Length: 221
Ligand code: AMP
Image (cartoon, rainbow, N blue to C red; front, side, top):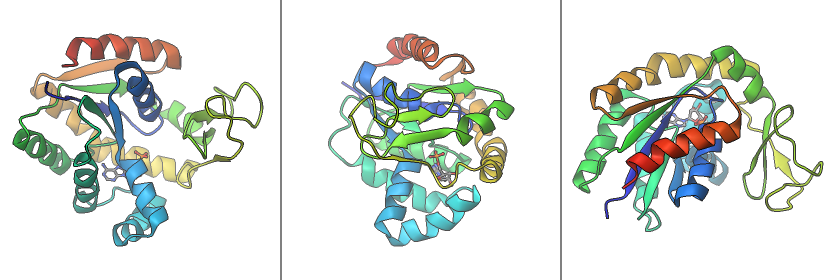
């Protein structure tokens, strides 16, 4: 069986990470977030991590070279047999072309690129209030999704939470800008390949999960 390859496209705050985690649960696919991989490299203090840190703090895009090296390493791991959900990748023309090459060599292809369509203005508020469990990564929000018991993660019972350094209003504007100039053109790229699906992602998390599930069940191998 050929592994399913899904891409989630959308600006920061669109819900790519949240929905990718749900697709993991619902379909047994594995979320590959280049943002998470880069943050791990920053924490590990690798050379790539040091270079990435400066760019990430400013809300720009890390070089294709660094991102591709980190992604290739991750894609070589043996736990991706069922398929992957790419979250935050590709973000440039060069990355999209490199992904096609990488998949082509393995006899694979992109099954669907799903564009989560949202209003930019709402993204600033969504991002400013978000935080995650430090232990399991479950996502929460000051306004939209508090844990059932204040201060305790619903999923793992953890009591430590963290906020991303780049989730401040100023950096978010830069990240939105980078999305529109460098990443949004990929929507047309995947449309041209006949694999683009558009999804209104302004509604409730559970509703989007359901609509996304319908799309994925049609395209998953
Ligand atoms: P994210 O977690 O997807 O919001 O990514 C956080 C930051 O990591 C972005 O603002 C970029 O600086 C960097 N980053 C993540 N993925 C990529 C990518 N595919 N290409 C370039 N930079 C990336």
